[in-house]
Length: 333
Image 1: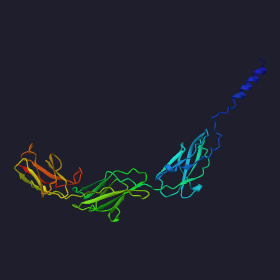
Image 2: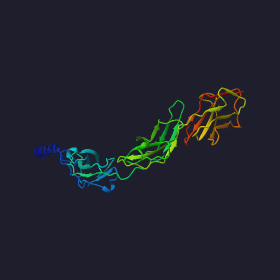
Image 3: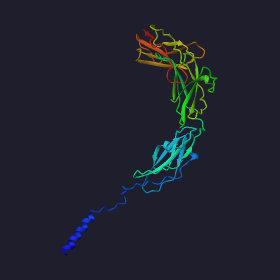
């Protein structure tokens, strides 16, 4: 081969090596935005209570990436729209929107290079409050008059699950015959699932009802009334404090507490510990005192100091409503 051809071939190869081969995936010069999404509409049948469901047609560009959904309220102005979500889906359900307010929506499309189309034309919808919330469930009312604490009544219930739930109204009266339609019996409102009523008197029975209220101010039916009271402390009778008893199986006696459902006698070897025995008894109906004997299958020790007290229970609560004085004690011979 002549020197001329060798030089020609080498020169041509050098030129080819310096040339860039265009790639199908090289989109660095792509400044074209995708098409504006079409078919934007509100799915009226699925837009119930405080939700609005928006749909639109899918874009067909190969380099399509995401949609951007914009929203404003009350006025359809391009400058008022704010981005609420970026999504690859061609639908979106807006949850927790305000009732009786016009909500406007527009959507745009974005390609993989970040080019965004113009926003589509606007659609609008104003949600309407149709259904009332469910009656709160699991409602309980328990009174307490614990040593060293202010008497109170504690209300608890299960949370409502409605997406448009807002708060609970609490009502109270000293009689079962009261209506939640009468604002006289309104106590408070809360978005929690518990309430502590400190405005109570020891020995007074209180009735409560609650309702659930949604963001459209529709109220549920009231719960069935529940009642309780802070019980007076049991007054111990015998064995008398600082007394001596000849029996190792004493009978414990105290004054009946009106409103109590049952009692528990607690015997310990010290003021705060050393549990020896507990005994349970239901409320008496016609006596003014309540008595409970120490069990016959066991006995206390001789020449020993014992502390005893009585826990009083009310309603169906498994926790004690109140206790007698904790310093009462006696000696065995």
